[in-house]
Length: 403
Ligand SMILES: *[C@@H]1O[C@H](CO)[C@@H](O)[C@H](O)[C@H]1NC(C)=O
Ligand SMILES: *[C@@H]1O[C@H](CO)[C@@H](O)[C@H](O)[C@H]1NC(C)=O
Ligand SMILES: *[C@@H]1O[C@H](CO)[C@@H](O)[C@H](O)[C@H]1NC(C)=O
Ligand SMILES: *[C@@H]1O[C@H](CO)[C@@H](O)[C@H](O)[C@H]1NC(C)=O
Ligand SMILES: *[C@@H]1O[C@H](CO)[C@@H](O)[C@H](O)[C@H]1NC(C)=O
Image (tube, rainbow, N blue to C red; front, side, top):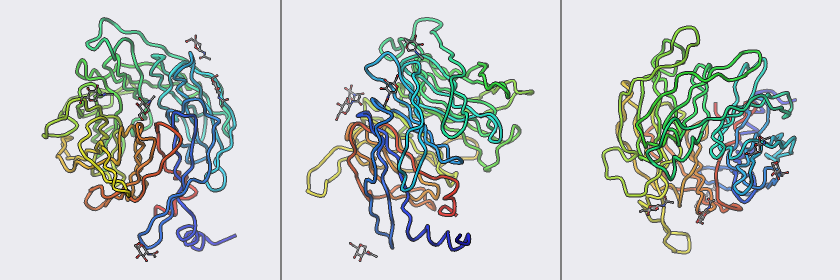
């Protein structure tokens, strides 16, 4: 056995950071990123097809070395949930694949880290949430399906023909699951029974009609999560291309959440929003100071390929988070290509991996955590198909890397 210190040095020098990439052609690709004195190398180390046909989302179970993948099932009546163990060099080994309600696009693990746990899935096409009990070593079994209907006619009949659950996230205290519903203009709120992990719907947040809430992110300005601590929620409306911030209050006795709007702007801040912009992903940076949103279809930038070819690029918008929940415009920067459907930052906040759906590639951009400014690409790597999700493999066992 190495000592802890020797192991840390060994990892920092020799072991690559792995990145998992899901794409609609049916693949999960493992990329290995290594850095030496500021020079980066990215190589494809393995490809797994056991989440085929249409991987749409990856949820890392960082404590247990597991990866869950959702197949959206674009041309079939059902989707699926599959699980993998993560081996040496990020190689994935399939554990299970189970049929779900159609169109799963996001998942989150909830429950008691030391007791029963489950994964909740948001189903876009199926207008539903499902829950699956995690029974160990990547095994799981069906727990619950909750399907939803619209209360009345929707403002945007094309995209709001039905409820469309688009994401599932935990609140910072891990007591509630929030689910932006693009079709119903709601952010649904759920609590659960500690023993059965069955979900119960509570009073939802009602964002502006026709905003099409897609993804959301919580923020605790002082990095402390508790019922009495200052908490904000940032909701990105895909249809309105807006970001709206809410002050979040906890109702007594697990009764749910209430929301007071404190700020709203386009995803471009005060700048003019190009027509057709459809924001997708939103996260608070690991340094807890910035909010970054990916904008699809704005073609705000052009990039020169190494051979001189000029290609269109969509953008990433970064805002500085303010203690009162408002946002101050910080940076508009090329995402590295077309349709940045998803992005992730590594734990130190020094890299941004962007999943470019229409270019079928991943752009890895540098970032300076001290200024919150995103910088030049260190690599643009083609993968098998339309990219849907990009996740750094930051398992807790490798936490020595992030310090
Ligand atoms: C990094 O790349 C630069 C430019 O290609 C090169 O001059 C330098 O020697 C490289 N450094 C290392 C440590 O490989
Ligand atoms: C997983 O299950 C889904 C739904 O039943 C199925 O369509 C798909 O082919 C399965 N995937 C694999 C790789 O077996
Ligand atoms: C598969 O899809 C059908 C039709 O939408 C649905 O009735 C059924 O419950 C789904 N199967 C599972 C296992 O969710
Ligand atoms: C992209 O934007 C253009 C307007 O610039 C719009 O006509 C088109 O429908 C948009 N495409 C998508 C897929 O949203
Ligand atoms: C895949 O990418 C192409 C552009 O390369 C785009 O036209 C198409 O709509 C995309 N399909 C999906 C399902 O993302």
